[in-house]
Image 1 (tube, rainbow, N blue to C red):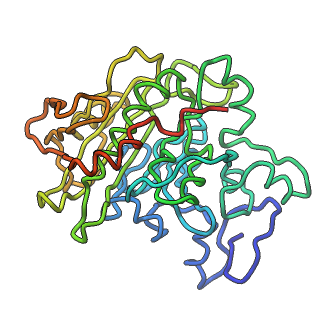
Image 2 (image 1 turned 45 degrees about the vertical axis):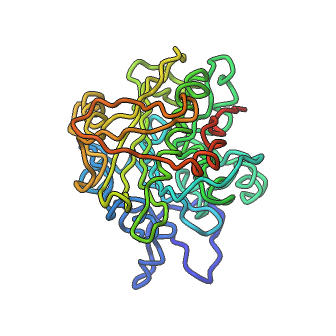
Length: 358
């Protein structure tokens, strides 16, 4: 069953198939698709519409095992906010992709949501489990194909884990997009010290660096993909949710000032923080790392994104003024901030609102 404009979706469990000849474009609001590009408003989260290439998972933009991996165009308040490829076996996202247009929101109280369509529940937007219960005649729905709030609540404290966002809420431009990041299809079990330590500090530096991504209209615009590599050692939260071994994030953007494309990446092992700083690396270095992890050739971004040029981030707030972080790439491309930008954005170098976690 598909949602059709001017017709309210039913709330009973349904199988998602299109039964409205000639209205297929409307069915995309509700039906599973093989490619993110089948939904134009979702395609925009990828540079030139080109998704990461992960052979065996997502190849040429097409999901390979459609019973396991689900492309989700994350819809909240009737607007697509970001895109996620979700692994229903490990019950964590493979990656989330989003457009960075400048941070602007602080965290407010927000209840975590789930994706109704993963449970064949005919609701087009992410909802809290309590909201779904009310829509289902005040009866709890069974959550089998994704992480649920109970999975985290049951053992997260004893295992020293947080619910770690892939699309961080402080990288969002408005309140609704910030709230949309609080869906468990955008979260992984993250070791608390790592989440609140190295990864947290990295996210602050990452946002500052992206402030230099300016398109030809001089507007901040960057493409970002953040992912998690699952563990193969049966480290499972509540006997359901895989605790990933590695988290990674990468960006690609155009720098109008220098008239060139830039790219960079970070990654870190999901284990207790040892105080080591996560350095900004080349896109090529990340793809080599992921290729080792997955045992297939991984391509995160479009060919226009430079692979071997190292981006030097200048003047992180945690560092001494004027001190530069040295890189190891084959080229160099500085992402500088003016003194005015530094003063205005100091607050953004603090830890992301992932550092909660209840």
